[in-house]
Amino acid sequence: MSASRSMTCLRQQVRLARSALPHLHARAQSVRVPLSAGVPITYPRQLSTSSYLLSSDKKDKATYKGKDSGRPQGAHPTKHEARPVSSGEPVAEHVKEDESKRAGLPEEPLEGPPPRHSEPDAYHDGTTAAPLAGLAAPDLFSLKNRTIMITGGGRGLGLTVAHALLEAGASVACMDLLPEPSQPQWSKAEELAKSKGLKITYHPLDVTDQNAVSKLFAELFEADSDDQPIRGLFTSAGIQIMMPAVDYSTDKFRKVIDVDLTGTFLCAQAFAKEWFKRHPTMDGQAGVGGASIAMTGSMSGHIANLGIECAAYNASKAGVNQLAKNLALEWSRKGIRVNTLSPGYIRTALTAAQLDEKPELNEIWLKGSLLGRLSTPDEFRGPVLYLLSDASSFMTGADLLVDGGHCAT
Image (cartoon, rainbow, N blue to C red; front, side, top):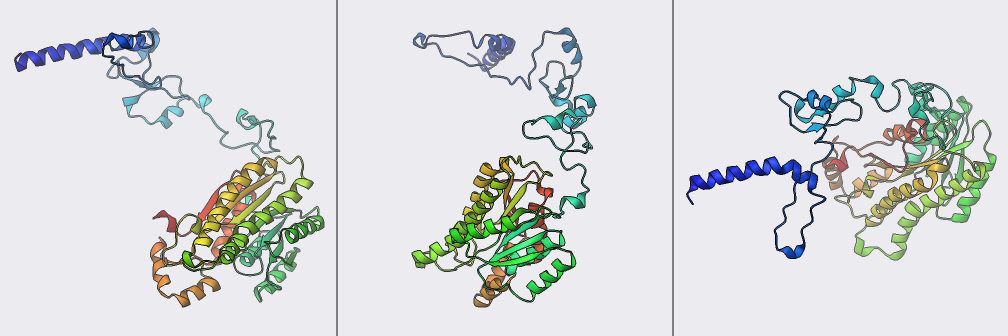
């Protein structure tokens, strides 16, 4: 057969196939060919109903006369007519065509008490208030009329955060392994608390001792007042041991895990037990007295740190990040949100000692930062305040990564 005759036959077969496609599509589910027949089976392409609309209605057919006639049409739930896929018009423009068909909350939520969990769709009827609608934006971050507990609060990041929480209106109960908190930072925090009519207390605590943790948390919950009840926990107690993984003894590895991961769990557990005793029916809805736990994870829970060998620490922080997700699963419907804060490198006395010991780390760490610098403890006041306040009312089981962009590359 000549080449020109072959091409002619091929074109005829293509035209026949095109004309038969709708019929094949309609009959695809009803035609059955025995496998023993030896007949090759060709399956027609299945077309999505969201991109290919078949309609016998004359009105619908008339709608698409013109250049788009016969082409696939895209459906959109907020529009009364389908949008031609090839129209070049964004979906958002079609949403605007019929305001009555828009989904979601009203532009400006009504004020008032929120619905309970038994009314999951109450916000969507346009008549029920959103829970925080009556608060001005700065008030979302306020911690007035509550007390926050802090582990690792005797120095460093924990004590810096304690000062910030006092500024936000909360009383603070700090716990640490140190017999006494660091000075002069502690005295400054006491002066601030006194000037604002608040309280800051210090309690020596080994977070790996379950009995000691349970006893202290029970005492603090018993002593809290009606006007400043305990409604938050920030866990920042932690240690770091840098050495090659092959050199770790069992005791040293377990020590890091016990303080950083087990200690975090024991404090969160003790907090939750006391909370549930006092709030057996709390639904956890923002703005009605729920609690928040913010755990200190680390960017090291996401990556391995160039220049330093700290397998135990990184494993413990990855565990903290995962622990928060599981506790959030169990407790969020009972009034406690649980999230983690994962800082990047912080310039503290500890990191200063590390840099003195290994000066080459400074260049390595700065190369890993998209901001070209290390952080300072004060830069984590805002993130912690966000996690503990009603500003993060819809956030639970999440990790807030504040690392200067280190994990972005």
